Image (cartoon, rainbow, N blue to C red):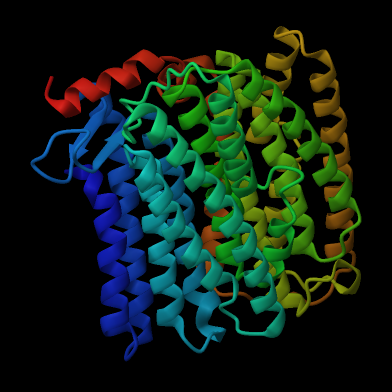
Length: 487
């Protein structure tokens, strides 16, 4: 039953906000805060529950799998739920002061809850069709949130994102149709695509790679992300880069290509190539940006490249680096986007060339921590996850990818040091920001150091290593079908 709460709670909260939040807008914020606290608490219970009783398989009716909608929470899903709930909670705390400038707070919070319901659904659904449905729920809410501030440039960015999102969704839907025609099932635990048509398997892989690759902002399908960030409210940007591109992109790729289907060397090589290109192109494009949020958007393209590289290596060490970097990037990039919102509030601009140094000390110090962490400087967690990915590349004989990863790391440090120099170039009288903004920034800044502790083998064993074992044990995931089907 706990699985269904992750969808029911945000959906009910969104409904209650529409019902009561329109007349008392503070209620909308408090309802959202309460909901995300509950979801964070439930997420924290998942690993202990799975440790005791195994993966959670829940049917939404009395019918057995595959004739019912199923929700499945294994270690990989639990890992993603923790990230989703954590970033959502801190974004909502940040929003309490941040959204006061909006004329319709209730609309913002209700859309945020719909986004959260969609993300949760993607992470725990047990069948491909509902994976698509929950993706669409999350995306529709995101389109509205990107355009929420209501200016022409916001509508333009949202429209562009919607066009690209629709293309990716169409590709994924065609891929799902092909899977059903070949396997007569959409239940991920049951699917075993065994076809004499090699072309059919290539077609499915191409459709899913293009669809999920676009949602993960993989080069050359990345252009929507840097355009969406300057228009989106900063807490939405934190969800967009911190969570959405990982859940709809990286998580879906891992789940479909390495747990549902037999791992394919062709898919891995494609991920290695385009992941590396994403790293390089994202870093080069970030160097030239003056808009701080646009720069962070290209940085996300580059950092997603590291994650795709780790996935493409397709060894236990590669998967470890990928999921570790998913966690670190979620924390670090959420921190940087929330910092960018605070900087914009104090400076009145996102243009790095026009900033005057009006930033208060907490925002300045947390921005430094986020920038150094995402650049791979020790002792922050980002250093250790990148190190594991590079070691995985070397140990698998892919030396050129390791060298490129190191070079991109140097470029990343360079453009972030440039950002820090421009944003904090003068010492003036700092302006104040709301307490809720400071709370989120300080918690995320602390987490940039806490996540570094997961590099220690003893601490890693009970968390990250369990996720890696879950990914690499495809047979165990397939065996859950027997549990759900009552066999």
